[in-house]
Length: 196
Image (cartoon, rainbow, N blue to C red):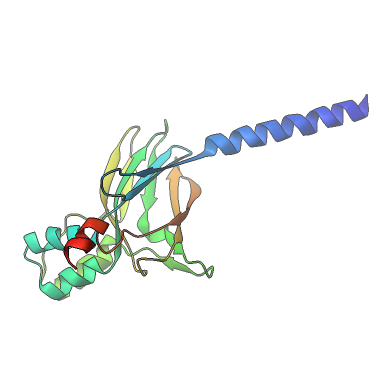
């Protein structure tokens, strides 16, 4: 009898752990049929993050339109830039800080994600007084609230990496990892053919 109870408890524990893990983090990858660009969407314990690959020419166009100096335009376009959408899908108060996020390269090294405040300080020194487009450094979300902006990673375009993101629900910290994401290419294949 004792062995049957032990086996039953072990099996039930495995079922509960498996169910919890499958509910805890759901990752979807969508490939745009027209452009081939990728979007990653993660739903993890009340927090949804969506990362959308953005082409360097799109970044150039955005900042050129707002009168950025050419050097600053090219510097921003040299980063791996994602359109980022964050959403509170929980029934609790959610908060995040980009300063707590990291990206991890294939060699296991972790680096901080560049914050909006860091960009704004660099832009101010270059004579730029623009503050839109970038994901805010921190956010406090009520149920259903969302926010968007650019997230920037300084890596070569062909390198895969993981992004480690943190958030809090009612003051309790959670951590998620999105594995093997990549930058947008320098340009779309059709554009590369036109430029040859």
